[in-house]
Length: 332
Image (cartoon, rainbow, N blue to C red):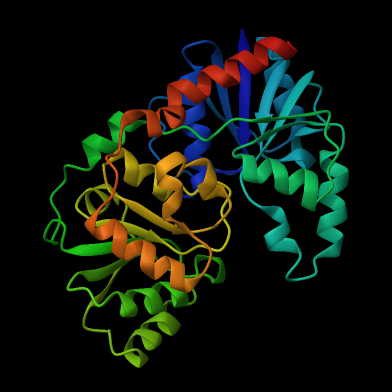
């Protein structure tokens, strides 16, 4: 059976990685055709059996007819909906309400509500599902929660690369310097930890200089290390004493999953999506304000529960692909 996955391009974003890992797992069950509209590829795609760059709906239709493709998973409704492929699933990987409401993007709100109406939706976390149903008031045909998948073996292998930092000598934060990543809170929490550990920040973004100036204002600039963007962040995650996440909203924070896979403790501000990751005894390391985040980080640095495989197994790419396979079989 031939199926297709569509994403606009393969820029270095979490949704691109999610689609590639879904494809990797689904190739065990189907002949997978991975389609991008723009020739932008920033990931290894050598494992893909069928990669196509198709810029029009008619090209996708011709491909579908050639291989009898009757199922497609896409994160773009507008481009794929006019195609003749019978079964269409649309994935959502973000909390749309947090992007729309603060900026009063009313037109986008009504556009999404219309686009997702009576569609098959795949939400990558329970937080995303709740956001679509209760904040955007979307009325889909059906909505299923299937997490993004992660290749644990690849993560562990890449984590063995040598880095310039001493192991367990720093607290780590990975993320673009943008409003939702909330680096201001991160620096304020770090200052109040009174720890000998450095704070290492990986990422780029338009607020980077502002955050650097804040570090100077807080008189912690000598202990805050700005490393820029890293093509392989995994050795930095593996060698961190702790990953500290301060994002205000994320559908499913991948850094938290990757940290736990590499046995690195995670403490996080309540970004909603983190609730799908830090469950049971680990849920006590989710904080709702700065005071809690400081207290929970101090506890985690001294006494964090043992991270077992069953905490992350549901995010293993083969397990998420099996859920997608079952969903496709049910609808086909």
